[in-house]
Length: 96
Image (cartoon, rainbow, N blue to C red):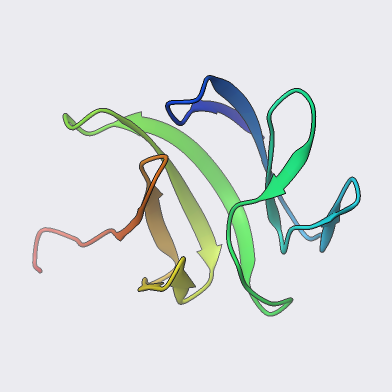
């Protein structure tokens, strides 16, 4: 779990092996805004988010997700991605 402000105020993000958060289908990652849970990643039970971290790479704080998944919000990724609060993006190493 970690806290991240996606522009709508700080919220708790939880990752793990679950399909439901509260009464909401959440597929291994969910956001708690202080009132309700909401899913972050559309996906299936084969996807797994194991690690969350907040980091500012110089373009502003973002939530980084790591695990076993190949797609984040329609963006092809390789088990790690960046969530800005509005869009997912692929993380690439320095070699490309």
